[in-house]
Image 1 (cartoon, rainbow, N blue to C red):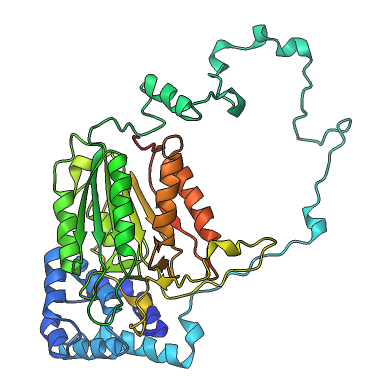
Image 2 (image 1 turned 135 degrees about the horizontal axis):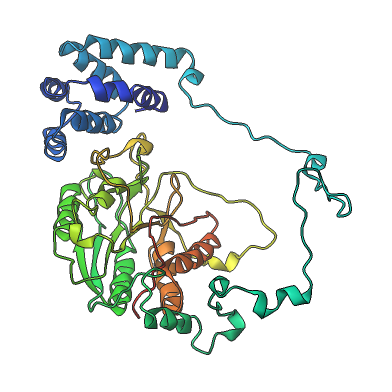
Length: 444
């Protein structure tokens, strides 16, 4: 589906979801081969109400190719839903005449001139009417006897005061006080489950992900060293991926403190409401990151309520290649002369930006205690070397090895982002969606 058709669907989405009668549509969608029986079964099984099924149908429609919109309009007419068919046809015709009519407005930044940014310094001897003037206190007013006890705060350790143990000393102070307000407490042994899905061999035109097994082995060793129970599943179809994730979410995590999900696969862009992107099963069908994360929400996985749930995604966020921009110093040594990095994109698709398979999310609670780390910025490729694995996983493993004993998760991933951004001729920058409520220090 091209950009104009997607914009038409999104512009009409609210009315479609509120008015669309899905029950009579199934046969029409099948007869025109717009949806497969498996896709319809997934919608019916995952969404019970009419509105949720309509929302899922409209979302999945974006993945069904360049003729999806006209075929869908024909299905609406076949089932007597002429008002919705007329709405979509009129909007589509307007889009073809004037693409700007359906494009979101581009807001232009206001450029301020230097004089508009000048700071006006008030004359201390001429206070501005209506403004409070600052009182200058002498040393005697600042003496300890003048301070109320309730305003005193515990002294925060300065860098020069931290001992040879580094920030681990500060962490020990937090743990010794039993202060769970500042950091998640990861005391369980094992700490939690870690599921790694490693998709290497694909059908339907997706290339073999050489080097991914190297990533998988590194991650197995790393998370075992961080006291996780590591389980690896290889070459799963989209349905098998969802089944494995649901099975993990339904386990009893009551005695554990954390859960980690790592997915190594090809990926693509996806329409979304919470988390961007999708990853492919070996059958060539995508599963959205949004769906993966929401399997572990409070309803699907109550025993992980209030506990950190971490997701690491090594996959392309799209098919754009970032050439970067010139800076004062470069690091040509970051790329070996004989290296030939491969992207984890899906080049065989006409429009990789349109694939998505999320669950209905209108009734989900606001995400909390969730951290999703992406190997690359949405819309861009993620690079992988055949001999050393992906840039993101290789760097993440190295950073965790050196710094996991002393730094929290966000600080670790800032180091990863900085190191990855300096690699290669094509550029890559990892990023994250952080809904954690506290700092997270791994158990080392």
